[in-house]
Image (cartoon, rainbow, N blue to C red; front, side):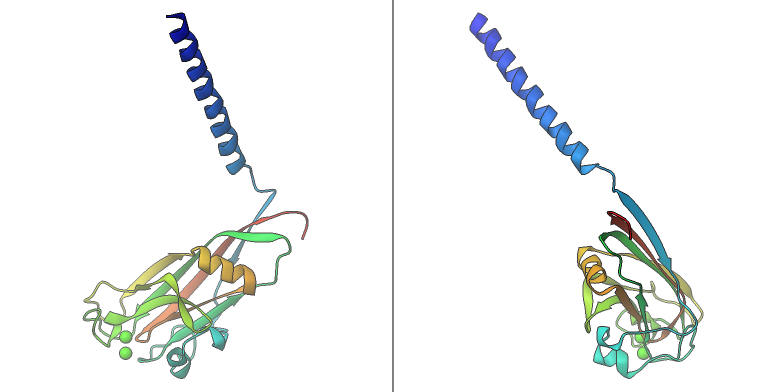
Length: 189
Ligand SMILES: [Ca+2]
Ligand SMILES: [Ca+2]
């Protein structure tokens, strides 16, 4: 009986010890960032695409700028910022408002129905960061806003190159685009 009680105490002690470790580990993960910063970038009337980020097709047929009502042309833009010393991007969201320049009759149609927004880098879509704009059917003038949350690949690209590119196909125009970046920094800039 006494042996059983001692064994129970030892087991209880082990459980307590492991829960202390668990708490320490959790508190490390929650350790606050020394210097959190945020940055919000908008879109001016004239986009500033870095051509190497876009596909050959996207570079071959381009819209004139923001709010261009033409069809069969891509909208391209690259956000760029100054390098930040001793910082890492912790989260970033891209919010884009588009307007259909044509009818959208379905995701296999060549009109606005198959239009997608995509984050692109060095000529390819960043995996996981493309989506259809509309739930067809839509009429010309249909407005939609899409928010894309950057994944680890996109954030690594952003940290490495200080830019983020996206394009919108080809029967839709862009009226607004905002990139919001949250960084964790150490030391002074
Ligand atoms: Ca088209
Ligand atoms: Ca299309």
